[in-house]
Length: 170
Image (cartoon, rainbow, N blue to C red; front, side, top):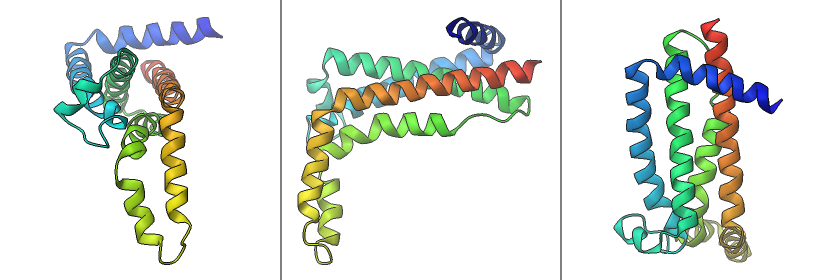
């Protein structure tokens, strides 16, 4: 089964990246996504702030996740663009899930977003503040696991889009 996935991925990559347009698109997407993830993933340690302050809190693990996720997103964008150009349908559910799953945890963890949302509901449901703290604590505690699941969703999206590329070429 793994061999089948690798062959599909190899075939799709050969078809897509043989053209300069899609290779350039992948490189541009990788660079943008790498910068985005590099600034976003450390938001857990910056109180939800995203920007240059993030670089001080960038750990080797977060840098690794940023590069891997950026690479996967770049491949997905190139595969999707190729498939759409040829008129095929693409798998966007896994891509969207992986993308949001990798961006939301650091932003929700220590930013004022969850307490602000909780404050809107506190008049109706007085216990909401306790829930937002529990959610933030869960995200902070299991950040690497959450990012790992998001990465796996992106891998799944790459494989689904690779199948679409090979079907489209046939």
